[in-house]
Image (cartoon, rainbow, N blue to C red; front, side):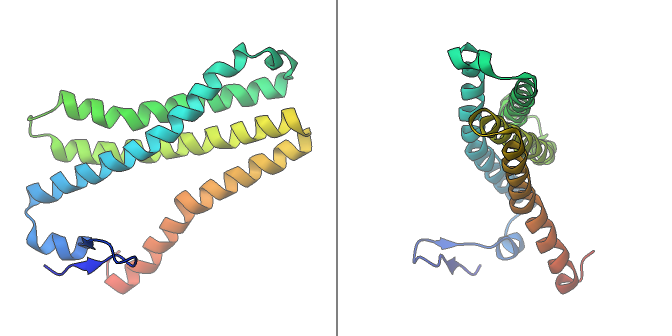
Length: 176
């Protein structure tokens, strides 16, 4: 197995292509589950902060000044962050419930699907929260600008760039 070094001179890393040749199916599933759960741990921290902030908002004295469109933006952000929280936490709970049942591969596939659904929900929550804050602090048309900027950034960085990478890689690999 060939090890590559991090660009910063840190510890060696094994690429998927290099590790897959030397690992069994069980080892690959174990590694994939570990990587997925670690990624979800990172995402759940961010969504929990947003969710907690949103849960506290209606109890703030200034919330009464928010207009109807602001209430809708708040509700969309709250629903998106709640949905993202559920999606990001579910794989860990299911892993605990299905521990030693032989369903680890199913958990990996489900966790991947839930991670993507959670990312979409989080993108919606971030977009609505940005628009809400911009509407309250600035103006309605600026809420649209900031909301659109957040939506475009999450779409580009989280979804479109990786999809383009996959499309570019497919012809080079000879895979479809």
